[in-house]
Image 1 (spheres, rainbow, N blue to C red):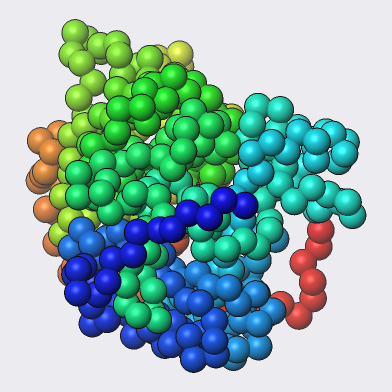
Image 2 (cartoon, rainbow, N blue to C red):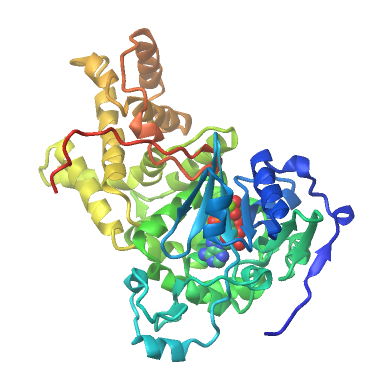
Length: 461
Ligand code: ATP
Ligand code: MG
């Protein structure tokens, strides 16, 4: 294998100091180093520290194998079927430690033929006894990717140059195999290697490019941008559940409006939301649909103030007008209001399912937010205590407030219900599932595992 010497930036020539690194991540790094292993910080945390931003989480790479990590750390859980990772659990933080991974083989056609040619993404389920170490589909998408490698290979298999920098705990230097330092200084997002190949291997990287450009204020490098324009229609080769997760990251991390504009400009938006996209390009009663941008601006403002906007609230804001129009059409056909809304939501979930799979539970929360808006019109109406006690009440009220703030009416109704709910405090389940469950990926530090309640008998299947 060719050897390429990386650029090594000594501690004196870069701004990252240990005081910027989470103490738990430092503990993990020191422990590995003291046991004779290589240990680097990598990925978003190094990039963000260099940009003067606070990292969401700290990821570590090492030459220790998952088995060695398990023996080294008591608080370690191995996760991942496709590639084993170690999760080191601390009280309020999770540090992810990966073993260096190898590059995807450039030409694995021979290996594929030997394995009997698999071409659907489901083929990464369980490795066959003589499975190839890497497997790509006929279209070049990576299906399996599970061998250990060295630091250079690990760096070069990453998506963008700015995401491939290592911070070495041995001497506090930075190690740059891919030209990430120069790109960070120039403010550009560039794939490592040929963008057409890298986006074909994993189309989600196109969404990541948009997200990093929007979030970090970077420009997408010209060839990388052109490849996105060329390959945007292939985005649907990623699975619908993964695209839902990526969508949340694009829209709920503080630069959703900018991400939305870039998605529309690159042609990534249309294949993700085909019917909604057509609707956005048409007018209703001679007015263009501008509420989406407005809603995303509002969401961005909240997130930038440190508030968490939960997925159902965001989806209700983004698709509310679209769903209301669709429900109105059902009503005109004679369907009663609640049933019309149910049908509009069901149709919407069905139309998105092949591209961006909104979990049914979340879809039902969106429906509840919108149907509560009709209920708010009655002040207080019948059995107000039971309305106040519904788990989704705070989210529905937040939706009403945001609509009022966006100039869509309802200010008086919101004020009334806001006061009424303060004066009539009810016992609501302490976790408001509509506001907290499935919260956006705010980083591993805040992620906690909830135990399922024990049941005396196993649930029927
Ligand atoms: P964020 O701030 O959103 O966490 P990040 O760069 O840390 O940004 P992660 O999704 O946490 O993104 O991934 C960590 C690292 O793993 C990335 O920096 C990148 O090096 C690598 N990586 C993640 N996803 C991919 C991918 N689809 N293809 C190649 N490399 C990836
Ligand atoms: Mg990260």
